[in-house]
Image (cartoon, rainbow, N blue to C red; front, side, top):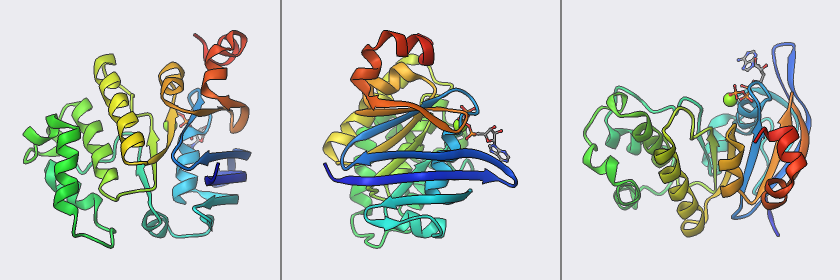
Length: 237
Ligand SMILES: Nc1ncnc2c1ncn2[C@@H]1O[C@H](COP(=O)(O)OP(=O)(O)OP(=O)(O)O)[C@@H](O)[C@H]1O
Ligand SMILES: [Mg+2]
């Protein structure tokens, strides 16, 4: 299987404090890979490394090109869209304006209206609120908008930082179902960061578990899910 992302000996630091220590992971084209771990394990920092918004060493090869050392904007142009923790929508702008901004760096703007309609078909709740200020949406609606905004880039890779955070189980199930559809139908590969291991393992093909900035364990999701000792020791359920 061809690799979309191949990360080797990735380290990252904030000032003099090193947070990631030589981690290796990869993502096959078309797959969903999950990165699991407790608070402070380095999940968000891993995604920041891919966007080059934190100081990194090592190698990150995306779609055949080295990312380490590139400007964040150029990483985005390569087709990497980030749904950050806390969602990163522009709260003062409307739903529609947020979606438009998502396509900002896209070279071909022709299909913009089409993609916006697609977002509204995927998330009908957003359609009714297209002129509403993003900051006044519910948490679930904001997450839907954040994902839709990222998809407006027509990315090859979607980075998702705890999309389930703070949302009711029913909304989370709905959002994860739609993420699965987007992966299958639009062939968008995903790197999903989650504290909710059971949820993430249901969606992902492959998973890595981070512990204090190191990969403690990795394997196909099914194997991790069905290994009771691993589940008890690392995942706590
Ligand atoms: N901007 C920053 N400056 C200094 N240290 C930071 C910064 N951001 C994160 N850290 C530290 O890096 C470590 C990893 O943080 P990170 O946010 O990557 O963890 P996480 O796995 O995403 O945790 P959570 O589940 O709480 O979101 C933590 O010890 C954190 O305190
Ligand atoms: Mg985090």
